[in-house]
Image (cartoon, rainbow, N blue to C red; front, side, top):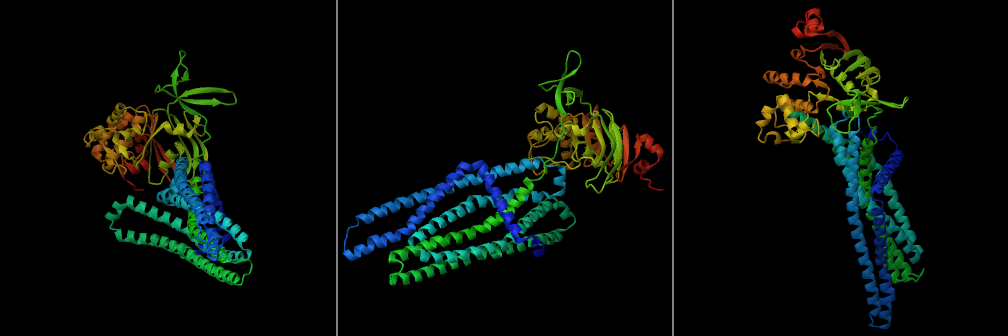
Amino acid sequence: MSEKINEKPSGSRVNTAVRLINRVIRYMLHYYKIPFLIVVICILITAIATVVGATFPQTLIDDHITPMLESGSRDFSSLASDLIRLVCIMATGVITAFTYNRIMVNVSQGTMRHLRDDLFRRMESLPIKYFDTHAHGDIMSVYTNDVDTLRQLLSQSIPQIINSVISMIATLITMIILNPALTVISILTACIMLLVTANFSKLSGKYYVRQQIDLGAVDGFIEEMLDGQKVVKVFCHEQEAMEDFHKVNEKLRDSTNKANRYANLLMPINANIGWISYALVAIVGAILGINGLAGVTIGTVVTFVGLNRSFTNPITQVSQQINFVVNAAAGAQRVFELMDQEPEKDEGYVELVNAEEDENGNLIESPVRTNIWAWKHPHKAEGTITYRRLEGGVVLDDVDFGYNEDKIVLHNISLYAKPGQKIAFVGATGAGKTTITNLINRFYDIADGKIRYDDININKIKKQDLRRSLGMVLQDTHLFTGTVMENIRYGKLDATDEECIKAAELANADGFIRRLPDGYNTMLTGDGSNLSQGQRQLLAIARAAVADPPALILDEATSSIDTRTEKLVQAGMDALMKGRTTFVIAHRLSTVKNSDCIMVMEQGRIIERGTHDDLIEAKGKYYQLYTGNFAS
């Protein structure tokens, strides 16, 4: 592990960390520039108040105690005046310290809210390919663990570092004015502390990056095990699961241990160097004071010892915060990696709009919903706009596609589906059936060829409008936390209750829904875990029905429904498909017998096409699949 981490030069890591922290600060200032300015002013006042308090012993000893001892005076009026002034200054410092800490709570929490909003907004704009190639648990870890490292950075580390730097500068100026000779000792020990801090931070920083990656891996593993717990139980793999978890957990322990091994040593080492500096200043100051050298008085020595602590303590505090800063840099790297992902590109300009017919029978755009949809097609060259009724005709012309450019998985796919036709895809798993449907709705873009929708190249259609015109029922149904009614309405957010109930009746889901404890108001949680798989699939079909799209994609839509339920839902499915262009992917060949055209696929190619009767008569691959007769 250490070899891999060490591949990146330490100087590059430091530059990367600084760049990431700068970006976090710029992000914060984008939303909270004025509050942060107030924080800096409050920190400055707090630091000045602290320095004034640290220098007061000299005034107390040299201006009050020593003269009173020599004269025997008992007049405390001037001392009282200075004490009142000191109390007021220190009270001001306390108030400003409270103020800037309170403001930073709002600033840090507000920044985290904006960051999560921006992260989610970016995530929603990403192509499906990103989610197909990244573990969901690892993405979730960005929102939780990695964002939380920035909360610590903003609320504590940055204010503490600013406070420490200002305090050090103010203290250094005061020390130089008070006694340059003793200041040299403090500066030398401070340089040693800074050198130690820099080196230890380099050692721990590389492991903080690994720690965040391993933390994401643990989260991803746990999510996977939670989703697959039934499978684990069925195959009695609890022991193997525990062993696998121990491996990823051990990686996290190892990286965290190495990160904190150096980080936890930093503060005590700097603290002890600070005490050495304190002792040296006291010894040298006492020698100078006793011998009356360099104008050093008892008050000077006492004050300078205090100032020395005020000068070295910030370095110790900064060294403690450096651990959080380095950890935050590792978290920020993962946060901004997600934030910087290229959003899904959409260069389409053809829109889907509500339409109506004018007195001449021509389609025109309507400001209200008419249940007539049309493609609004601007022609930039001519400066005109044409409207074409949305019918659902789909044509694939010599289409090639590969998930990677160097590996084509679909070859020369050509087909046409007239409006209202039912096209079925059959074939072995991995033949490319689902891939074709992913291309029609542009989850992925083709490598070569053309796909036309109502005679319009789908690259010209805005993706959101294209997908809005396509209803989909997938094999893996996903239900959201909410009522049954809300889950059906997900297909059309402005659908009325009556429309949702009608869609449920069409999918033959109304019967079981009304038998639920609260009917359509029954709350679903955990992806509909309180429903059977077949019931969940029926709700997905109802969701597609309420959307009332002109084209449908049914990807193994009845695979999770038992034979009896399948017969009930088939009538509803036929009603749903009536008048709509439908693409059906099915392993149960009985569900595709009445298709207008059946495409038989093998290794990314269409090897047979025709109606059920035609393909049975041909006695080719479809005949073998249908009859189970694979004899050569």
